[in-house]
Image (tube, rainbow, N blue to C red; front, top):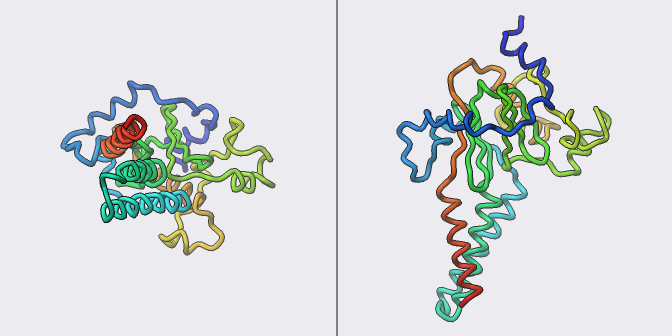
Length: 254
């Protein structure tokens, strides 16, 4: 016998959930801020509780770490040589490393005790398990809640080729996300939790499908609570971006 919470979810099509979160509903999550230091963490991360598993793309992070390594190597070479003469080279290296970290390395999605944390370039979003209605991975991870909020996570996504492959022979030849139907997975059709914790151990399972399944199963098994979504700026990427902008100005005008 399905619970009232599951029954409500079956009657809600994905298209009816595609609505940006209202500022008032997001601010209600500020009640979860208690004890948050604001140094490295923020209100969203604090509200989410302990991290259990982190999901992130592989190709983008590899390119990002390569860019960071190149920037560090250039700075070290400039320090060994003549730092004053090579200061513009150092500026370029620092900007490269900062941008690679903010854009390619930082975005991720983590499964926490109280819900999902979507770490994007400059902001973090916490979505409680009890509020998640559906999830799907298209260009980005998309989370829809039962109160009509809609969140995106840049840490996990699909390429156009993989989306076309997923769509072919199933519901439509149109790429998921281009029509209101998409590939939103209702919880009543979500598969059982994987027997093995590592997605690599599951033969023939794409990483994006693994992420969808993990989030769907965990949300379906959650109980109702009073937690609300929290969206908060992150200090470190903002600082890195500010440093990069300052160095770009110095590079252009000096």
